[in-house]
Amino acid sequence: MKHSNMRILLIEDETGIANFLRQGLEEEGYFVDLAQDGASGLSMALTGAYDLLLVDWMLPGMTGLEVCRVYRSEKYTSPVIFLTARDTVQDTVLGLQTGANDYIKKPFHFDELLARIEVQLRPKNETATDTEFILGKIKLNVETHQVWKDEDEILLTQKEFDLLEYLIRNKGKVCRRSQIIESVWDIHFEYNTGVIDVYINALRKKLNLKKDEDYIQTIRGIGYIAKELEQV
Ligand code: CA
Image (cartoon, rainbow, N blue to C red; front, side, top):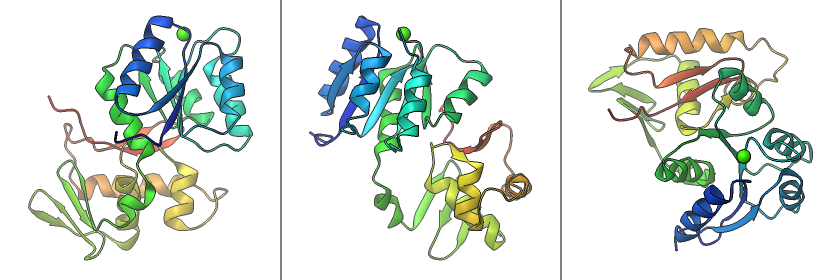
């Protein structure tokens, strides 16, 4: 059982979906606890027993959004993934602003959900020891400080390299502007985060990202995400 030490709290009021997800996740070796309304989900979450929360957006009593907001206000850091049928940009931004790490739109494929969960639960030191990172056609080596796209070496400035490295190390995760500033520029978020956009634009240009190579995506009002694109 590859995930046998991981505990997931599933907060989902639709019994059919809840049972389907619980069974699937348990087959993957996760321990799964289920809550079917927001308030009981929240009190379970606040025990601090979970490595990840899977939270439906629309719940009776208390919404998933409120659950997440309170969970974060109590300083819990386990990743939160929203299950949502709402798909407007505004709702997504709202979800991420409350401290969710990712969201997945219903209906979704179970395999996609599994992949998102694995990204969130991947041990941080697992990537820290790697020297080579891949993002689509882009390859980055942190030891030699080299970047390639396909076979072409791309020459980047130190900051451009640091920014790309940060995004690639966090591939599949939303990187907030304040996090990027703190990690790459080593300063705090009161600083004008507009500098990030300048560097992102420079990166996109140097990497010559075509329309179908949108590996560095903007999440309006939040930040950026480095993403492998779905195979067509
Ligand atoms: Ca629901």
